[in-house]
Length: 142
Image (cartoon, rainbow, N blue to C red; front, side, top):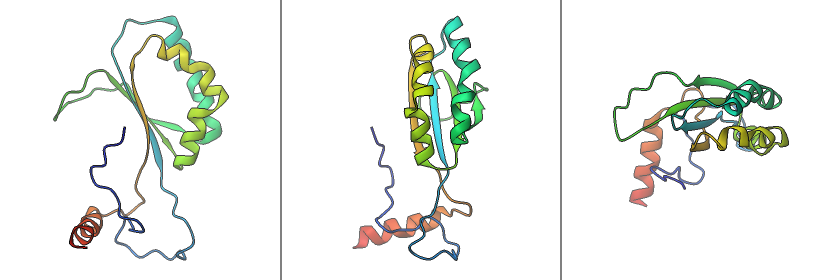
């Protein structure tokens, strides 16, 4: 499922600042794994998953930026807990999720804690949403 809220027009840059890289150098964007997990009764399998998950992240430079903290729902409906892991890029996020090490422990959580998990690309340092809005306006006018 993709939201497609505001798609980046082909070739459009995300930031408004000057970039000294050549047009052929690809920009590496950070990436994230975001999980929403339903609240469930504690289970030993889930404890084991939590104990082992970091060792599956390390080879891909994954690090937790959120893990079950307080949530304050301001819009929509959100249930459950949140976990978010940062990666240097989407390629490594995908490689982590698909890795034999992670796939081996995934059932420990998935059997007991229903939820959703998405991998997504972040934005570069200096990202300016007005630049994306200008690209959107140009695409609408075109």
